[in-house]
Every structure is written in C-alpha cells, then in structure tokens.
Image (cartoon, rainbow, N blue to C red):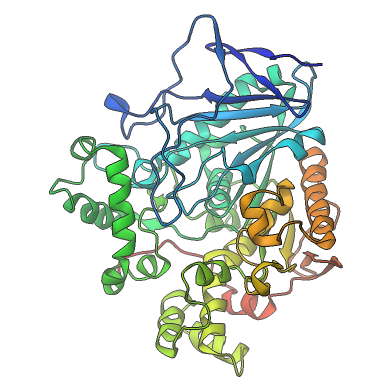
Length: 496
C-alpha cells in the first residue's frame, strides 16, 4: 500500500498522496510565478527548494475571464502541473499530458471534469497543466513575447521530459491532448519548432480555429489598455492587478459586437484574446504549415462533436431565437468566400436561420479546423484517426444534442461530476456509460500503441469513427461542409 509517495525531481523532492489507490502529486511548479519582474515574460525554470515539498493541493487558479471563470484561489504560483501515476516505481509507462480548454480565457487543470483516475488505472501516467490565459497568456504586448501560454506549455513539456521517469513514465512515449482551446494548443504545438521532440503523439478534440493576425491583436490590446488609460506595453499593463486585467478582458468580450465592422470574425466569435500568428512563436496557421510540409506529421487522434455550437446557444439563452439577419451575418463573416454563404444555403435546403447559423459556426470554429488538422497531418506524413461524437446529451430534454464539451466527461469517465451530471443526468443512462467506456478505451489504446481501434483517415475513403449507442466507422459524415471548405483552410482573423 502506497503511503505518501516521494519523488526526486529537478529542483527538489516532492511528496504526494494516495487517492483511490493511485499516487497523486498536485501543484508542482514547472516555472516561476509570472509576476513582478516576470510578468508577461517567457517562463523561467522554478527555483530549487530544500527538503521535501508537499504536493497535496492543486496550484492557484490563473487569472480568469469570461462568463464561466474558475473561482480565484490564493497565491500567484500559477504555472504548476499535476501528476497521477499507477506506480511511481514503474518504468516505461505511457504518458498523457492534458491541456485544458476554456476559450483561451479560463480553465484550470484541477477541474473535477479532468479527474485522471480512470485513465491512470488503465496504466497511463496523466499530467495536467495550468498555463496563462486571457491577457496574461495571449495579449500582444510591446516588450513581451507573443503567445506566452504556448511557451508555458512548452516549458511544462520540457519538465515532463526531465522528470516523468521518476513517476514511472517514459519520456519517449508522451502524448499531448486537449479539447477546444486545449486542442488549438495541441495544433500549435504540432507545428512549433521549440516543441519538437517533446512528445510523440497528439489527441485533439474540437480544435479551436480562432487565431489572430498581429495587426488585429495589436488593436485588441490597445482597446484593452485604453480601459486603463495606459499604453499597450508590457511595462504599462504590468502595473495592473492580474485579476483586474482579467475582468477587463471579460468586459471587452461583452463589448465585442461594437467592433464587428472593424474586427469582423473575432468580434463574431466572442473572445478577444486569442493566439497570435506572430511569425516567431507561432509562425503560421498550423493547418497551412502541415499541409505544405513545413511541419512534420505525427500520430494524431482528432475529432469533434456533431452539434458543436449548440452548447453556446443554450448557455446564452439564444437557442431557437436566432434571426435571418443574424444568420446572414454569420454566413458572411464565417463561411469561406466568395461562394460559401450561398453554398451553405444550397447544402441545407429548407434550413431555418438557426440551422444555418449553427452549421456555419460549428464548422468555422471547430469542425473544419479539426478536419483540416487531420488532413494536413496526413499530408505531412503523419497518421490521422478521425472521430465524430453523435451521441446526444440526454439531460435537459435532449436540447443540447451532441454539443461542444460533451466528449470530455465521456473520455475521462467523469460522468458523475457536476458537469457530467449536467450533460448525462444522475445517474447516467447505461448507454452513456457504454459510450464513455468506448471513447476512453480509444484514448488508452492510442496513447499506448498509436492505434485507437479503427482505420486511419485518408482523403479518398475518409474513414471516421462515429461514437454513439451503436458506434460505427463510416465515410466522414459532414460531407457538405467538407465540400464547402475544400481549398479553404482556416485563416487567422484579421482587420475588416
């Protein structure tokens, strides 16, 4: 029986705890707190400590923005990670590094939704990472590196390479994984030079397609700084309390409709601080880099849900209320030009305004970025496995459908968490448990062997696993969307 396991890592020694028969270490710093002179700086390795450091509690929540931020916690040691291992004395176990989502403005690795116990019991060493979000991680600031959140993730992966063997993991068998903004992070890491050699495989659920040009990002930061009467420089904004700055990001997000004419797609999608194609940290859109062979392919498990946008329309209280004008605006801003808006109307005869808006928004934000990542990875010499979740959330009378985020409690086996119960009810139906087991096994197989259990995707057959009460492998189901977006890989948002 394990009793407070102890592991020696670079910089010191950590003491974990035993949770449901597994060794768990929480709140381990992988970089110094990004405050004071390190505010808006690239992450630096943590300072060493003497003695044994208790790793019992999750690290402090990073400053959060948006309608659903995690609750603030005390402390500024924001750049921490957690490790859950079935056996710290083992050797060569496969490793899963989880990068949480949250629209690039919120989220935390300690969310119960990401409880690693089921995956660790299956033999994986599971690492989950906190990284800077919102303005701290993504605002384009004069005097600071761009995409600091991605640099945080690279620093965490470097920590894994140095230390994971001490937890029973194999640094040569690391899989990075994420959903939504986390999946967009995975896509970026696939093509970032400084991330090469830090992982072997990748899992990406509902890849977020919202990136920004440097020109647009500079205007967003200027608008943010204007709220404080300051210049949009790292030195100036470093004087603003991080949580106060995060609140300003929330306010700017609420005001985005006022900027629709100038900021276009960014304003339509509702999140102001997103990753920047800056030419250095992120040299270009990941889809373009892979498709052109400027980044190497890898083993990739990637997919999306069928009804991605439904979650947001329901949470906003807008489901069933969208107008023809709103659908027209969404089509003009989000569909590929010049023929995309008419192509959507032709592909969905008799569709309501809501149907059209939901289709183009789901495609532009998640479905097509996921598909193009799969196809780009295959073109770059990698092996892509594609899925779509079609099992609908049974809660709330089924209104959510197979919505954004539904796949995460299924994959982690966390149907009994607050969010899991929100989706699946309490207790969950037996078929929900079956879908969860199947998706979870696909993850475990892929992380362990590189094969999730169905044939790889290639452009002619387009084989795709459909997860439902009766799962099957079929031709990619969203053919009309694939046709509309053929030759139109997602591009960074720019000034209108």
